[in-house]
Length: 319
Image (tube, rainbow, N blue to C red; front, side, top):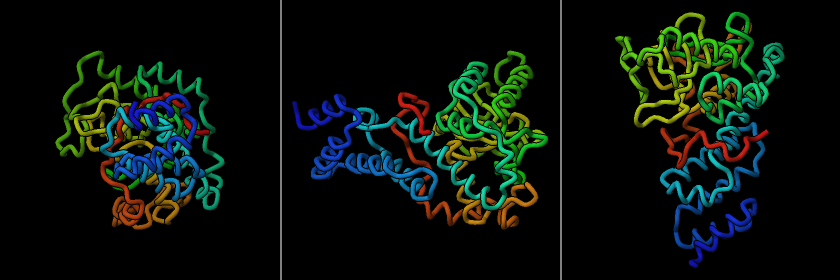
């Protein structure tokens, strides 16, 4: 048995033993192998508390270290699957968002619904006929929506037709709207998109794909949705913007990324709540432009590859 095979065998025998991984990382580093950075980044991230910019920078570093590594090696050597970290990223972003709301909009924070139970999330998945990504599941475990389209907080940013905050669906609202989409289709094949506006990003040029799951509604005809059937080059679980069920663009790499962007904008004062409404500090420049410096500071590569299935749930999420 080679030295490397012995390390991997020891990790399989004692998957929670960090000492073996760190010794293995030193051995890899002596050979100049990139895998060492991944093992060290994972170890460092696991030691950090959630809910701060340092954790999210560490998560970006872990994802950067994972890019290009063989998926088989990552699966054998890692301590946690990607689903664990995606769930942690969503919960950490909510912790940051809640901290800002506690200081600047306590009434809005108090009105946010509690999280859904694992049983409720599983029931929604059965009704949808899909497994939601780990970050979406964790987000709903923190807050089951934002209180309804008519009376809930417009806490989620969108800007395709101009900046506005929209309410986050509860699980029941998510399922009801998705079912309405399927009734509208009437069992017919998915149609090509009918919008004359150009399609942006790796999303299929379709209308009402049954593997698009709505997570917001603006009260008119537009939604943010979780895309579980992306076009080539896309990521399962990416967030897309829909206009009357037509795909328009990719908004974020995942729900965790959209929440992280919201957290960063609130912390920097680029976004704020006025009379319960989410507004951009520089409305003319727009939300995305206002956050360019924050995104650069976080050093997020676009896109960062992840070496295995994002919906892998072989370890429980945090919290």
